[in-house]
Length: 390
Image 1 (cartoon, rainbow, N blue to C red):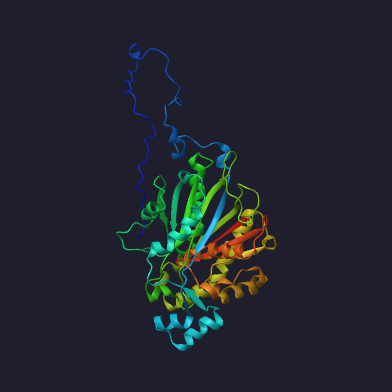
Image 2: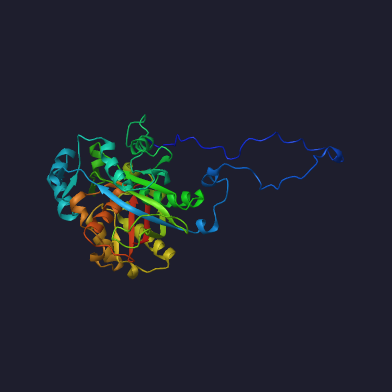
């Protein structure tokens, strides 16, 4: 599935009225209509038009910061060792040892008997649980890595909307940045909400997909993918927006993790992705951290921060060796990167940074007011980083 479009009927922006009177010819002013002519902005509109862009949103909404609420994660119960995955993918003993001893991978989660919706619905339902009125969810964004996570006749975003009971939400997919699409979805959701006109409106972002063949399971000789899904609500820090969501750490009601900056870079040199030549693949590996660090530096610059301001980096889980090399190159203490989930779950595509954030919350590693940097890299190749205040 390359793209999924919403089937939600959109309201008429302007109510139908009487046919306009023909404009009189030059010099024939007697044909001009008599009486007062209403000003151009006095158009009778339906109450719902503000969120559809017919009426400009108020200035305090257009400047409102994006907030993340209720980050939830789900992983299948069954785990598979790297040796089991290696045997299934036809890897030799040496390749399997590299994954475990150098890349830092140990096992992944996967449910061969469950379908895509068995993976996606639990996290999404948890993110919506306790929501006073599901109608405030105006958008559902399904962020995924694979261009086709399901057969072409299955519109995943539409079906997910139906299963979650979000009939009034616009549903669509975000995939063009591959594994970095999850961070892009947050940025897109924030822009949609700022143009929406309703400070209480929310967007639901869902990530997760299944690796259904060995090419997708064993990634470019550097990682192994597992299955995980995440979901979270996106809102705005706007006056008059009664969120009703306490922070996960029990902080101030109505608060969420504030997005301070988002940066993304695309290097078209590696656009062949999985089909890169051996030479291009080598160069991709050699420049990987250079481009990633550039995106991280951009995010810090946009937020007016330095690396020392960041409490922890919340990474994507491709492997540990790439991160340890980056630490050595830029002087970052390895203890300031959350690498604990790499041996537990492997690389879970778009879900990685949000799965890590949920794990950090469960272990008490996030604190209100601290700054965190989320990162992700999509083959193709897109490099992204986002700074949040928890």
